[in-house]
Every structure is written in C-alpha cells, then in structure tokens.
Image (cartoon, rainbow, N blue to C red):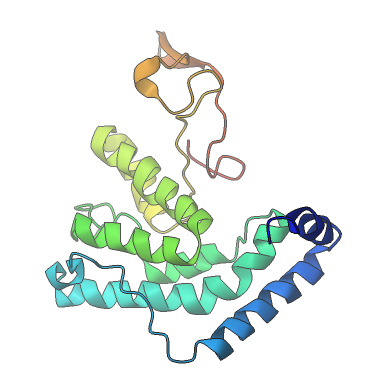
Length: 213
C-alpha cells in the first residue's frame, strides 16, 4: 500500500474537482453499503447534554438538523472551489443562535455550555463553517460584549446578532502568529479624538467579507 502511494497521488492530481466530488460520493455510498448497521459514535463522553435545559436541547437539535440538511450537502463542493458558501448565512439567521449567552442586545441569556455544544455540532459537519460562526459570534461579538462601551454594544451587537453585520477578530500576525503573550506588534495610539492603528495581520477568519473587525 505504501509503495503504491506515489502512483495514487499522481492519479488524484490528474482529477478535476468534478471527478473528485464523484469519487467522494462513491466512497460514501460504498461505506454505507458495507456498514449498514454501524451506529454513530457518541462523542458526548461526559453526558453534557443531560445538563442542558429542555429549551436548550431543542435549540441544539435544530442546529444539528440544519447542519445535515443545509450545510453537509454543499460543503465539499465549496471546499474544492476554495470559496465561502454565503448562502449559509441565511441558515444561521433562521437558527437565531448568535450571542446566545448575552443578556440583552438580542441575546437570550442561555448557558455557555449550550454555546459550546453548538460549536461542536457545527464542527462535526464542517470545521470551516464553525470557524466562520465562532469568529463572528464568539470572538467578534464577545469582544464587544465584554470590552465595548455601551454605545458600541448598542451600535453593533443587535445587528451582528441578526447577521446583518459580519464580524472578524484581528489577532494573528506574521511574526508572532496567534501567541499574543509573545508581544503583538500592532500598535494603537490616541491622536486627538481618534485612534490610529498600525500593524499587519494574517489569516484572519471572515476578514475578506467582514463588516466589523
């Protein structure tokens, strides 16, 4: 098997995206046919679901269903194209799950456990979709909720909760990565009534289409 690896890689390199999608679909069908009675693995090792309120469990079920019906059928195609599937924003709008633990500003005051399990449910289908959601709803919205002025919270959070504005979080830098403790090089200085930000960022999730960074 190892000896044949170069030939296998050469074969796959010659396939276009359409052929690769057909190959993946065929492999999935073979797997289902050969394992008709295999039960899904229960990844909830600590039985965290039992700690959710009934209303929270219902929200989690809605998210899990949406991932299967709306995200899973399209995500491989967009992976191959290297594009973001903007239609999934409508899915998250309908789910109404941004800022769930926030008190006010469109939030529902739900538990952080629910938010964590929602992230797990999204990542189970596609990690990149989870990155989009986590960067927007946790890093961007969370920073404003915890550190922003009341004016900033009122201006941004309600619209971000409805996904009318998309958020990004400018952490990673070329020289230090995401290790903020090593000394981020970006500076922020007050000049009169404004702030001047100088620096360079890299690999910022959502940055190419975000409204708020």
